[in-house]
Every structure is written in C-alpha cells, then in structure tokens.
Length: 252
DNA sequence: AATGGGAGCAACCGCTAGTGA
DNA sequence: TTCACTAGCGGTTGCTCCCAT
Image 1: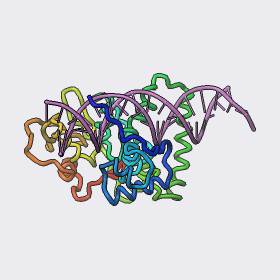
Image 2: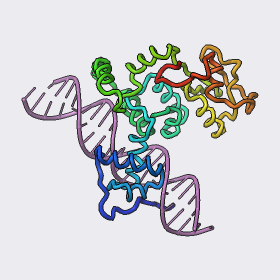
Image 3: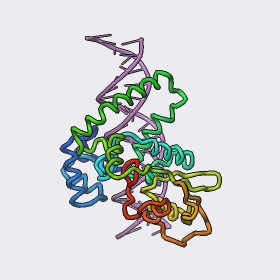
Image 4: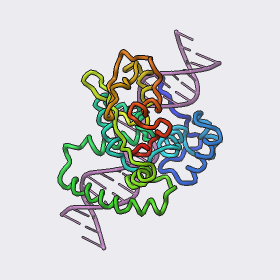
C-alpha cells in the first residue's frame, strides 16, 4: 500500500493551535471556493498550514452547522447504542448525530466511558459541581453572546426553544434489528433511513402503522413501499410534518 | 499560595481507501 | 494494471483548565 503524506512542508507548515486570523482566512477561502482540494486550500488561502490541517480544522471546528457544547443525554444514548453496534467507527456514529464530529464523539467516549470503571467518588463530586456551575453560567453565556457559536444546543437554549415552539419532547425511534436496537433522533429520520438503506443494513422502511408512542417497529415487508422523509416520520408520530424540525431536544 | 494530577479538547500522525490518468 | 494524488478515518499526543491537597 502506498503511504502517502501531505505535501512536504516546503516552507514549513505551521503547527499548533489555530489563531482567529487563520480561522477567518480558511473560512473565507472555503466559502468562496468550496470544500475539497485541501492542498490547494493550503497553498492559496494564505494560511500557512498543511492541507490536512486545514481540512481537520474546517471539519471539526469551522464548518457551518456544527453543534458546540455539551453532548445531550439523548446524544449520549445514541453514542452508547451505536458504539455497542459498531465499535470505534466514530465517523459512522457521527453521521447519526447531526452537528457532531467524529473527533468530538471519540473524545467524549474516551473521557466519559473508557475510564468509567476508574471513576471515583471524587469524579462524581467534580462532575456535579461542574454541572452546577455550568447551569449557572449558561444563562449568562446565552445572554451575553448568543451568536458566538460556542455553546448552542444548550439546556438553556432548549428551554427557550421549547417555550417558543411548543413543547413536544424529542423521542427516540428504536428500530428493531434482531436483538439490537438503534436509537435515532427524530429530526434526522430521513437522512438516517436513507443511510440505512444505502448501507443495506435494513434495506427497508418504517412501518408507520406501528409507530405508536414514539416508537416504530421495523418491518421488512414494507421495503421500498414508500420514501421515508422527515415529513413521513413526523406523520408517523402524529406530528405536523410541515413544522418538523430539530430544536436541540424538542420538536415543534 | 503553590503545585500535582485528572479531565476535556484540539490538533497531529500514520494509515487506508478511493479516484483518475 | 499501475501509480500518483487526495480524502478521510482512528489512534495518539499535548495543551489548558480546574480541583484537591
């Protein structure tokens, strides 16, 4: 197998943490020219970074639509389930968590689960005090810098959205696959089912008739009978398909 | 007040897979 | 078919922050 390396640092690519100026240069370049061709991004954007580094920075930090902030309990549930299913396939797992990157999930898993058995009372103590402090800070942060892209999808945010949009709690849909269950966030039902179909894991669609109480059973016999879209999923759960969107914990 | 250690996260590294000439 | 190039993945490292002592 060819071991390829990114272009040799002819002038010495910069390493280490990205500066706001570099972020700006990269974002502007990618917005103008699109993703891909990372080696030319490195050469032409004015950022003295390797293409690999540029790609990573964009994918993990600068890309629009990224959800920053704490992993929600729902997302945590998904991570646990999918990790049980696929192991360390972080990018695959990340596909089912919109706005989350594989790196983020990988880090989360390592810090929260890999050493779980090592966790001590001290750890628990610290966690709860952190949570407390975060809760206190959250409202302040949201008030002070709502647009800085650092902490969105927060619990405080969810509460706001919940108030604004009318309070239907986000449920998981758990398709049955033999003895395995797979949690899916409601808002992403269409991409998820498309992926599943593409991957040939289930090759079929939801049985809407069974979609009661926020649960749907997978039904092989319904393969290809209907195109599952967000709206269809919304219908399956008695929601209004025209207003179905993710609000970071609640659907309207 | 100083400092040692753990947690969390950003970034790097090495490798593989995909693609087009 | 081979080879060069590119994109992406998973593992690892290193830095920063914060808490406990």
